[in-house]
Length: 270
Length: 314
Image (tube, rainbow over all chains, first blue to last red; front, side, top):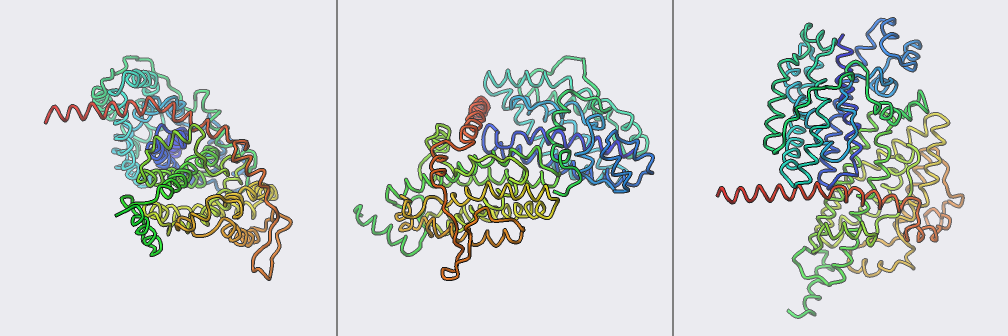
């Protein structure tokens, strides 16, 4: 159903935005501190639009479906009290099994090269993904995708430029960039594989055919890596699970940090 | 022109309130004073990103998170304009960074205090940005043109931040008992350090007299501090919070609030490096800078390669 599909996109945006926001105040140079914080804000903005829409969808469900949607005790308590959920409930009250973000998005920042590689793979895919989703039969998703495409176009330019600059910079930066591109590679397969919710979305006319996007993504990645004098990783083993709520160990810590206040002081206005 | 007539010309520009521009002659000490003040100000913006950035990943709602991210990003932007303004006086950004990283340059001591709860983000916006605005609004008319122009933009954004901080405090003070306590506790901890932000008392402020003469400074530390106390005491009433100073009392005759004695020993101790977070703040800046070295080197190397290629093609 479109709730799960929407939440998956929202979770990607929230978790990647969270990771990127960890750089704020710690970037390698002031101008890039500003640039990367801007990117974090874009991801967070997209997460908010998607969670707001997901909350609308959730609140329209029959009660029985609401209580079985998540494992969250806190959300079920809201349902029992007849309280509608909002963007914050979805972000702050679900546990990791209910999050469907890509494993790629939850990977630690590592060094600048690692952060760039993670963003580059993500941006290159989502540039094509949002290009397609802006034509979704679902007007809400189409509108969010159209706005996101503008931002993602910029993100992709930024991350591609850094891949090239580091790849073709110094010996050290080349080796760090290659390492990062190799290390993140095994988290890219999941982007290119359709989950049940994504297949359903495609069949229902509001989703995106990832099979058509995969070759576009591959070409773009290869093109940029060539220009960066880097080699395309050859590994074929791909980690999966994020889209089905099976995450890496990182996820629990991200949520423990992010959800701390809402968990320690439940039910308050901030 | 002789040095004497250069000086006369400079003095007459100052007296006629005409901005001094980078290519104008200026006394060495005027230049030094400005470099010290502007770079300290820039460093304060950059160090100030750390205590606030501390709560980005833990902000209690997505809206608050977005506002906080944008705010911390604004601080980086302020740092950027201010470093650029200082560069017009003949110092490079790298030199200024070096002074910061080695502990030679100072920054506002307020950022050596920790942000312990979410209410601290509200208190910083309300009090610290509030105090900063009082210090900075007169700087929009400071005698050095590039600094004055940078401050116009900085002040616009700071007043947003101040309102956002006040709004966090208002939400907390209207919230549950535990939130009200959180707000009061943050107010108690940030109040005195905020008063110290205006600098030592006029009688002990080594730079004030000359800076006022040069119209770098327009009001003295004590004048600005009094204004802050007067305004903030009224705002605390709106929040329903208790003043952290039991001696706060309206003085009809002076038309101002009287307030208690500031602990200047604490102030000088923090300035000397013994605040709760001096060490962590400098370590965080040094870490970011050192770990970014290979990134900056790569960017330079790549830019040089591109330039060479372009030259070969031409």
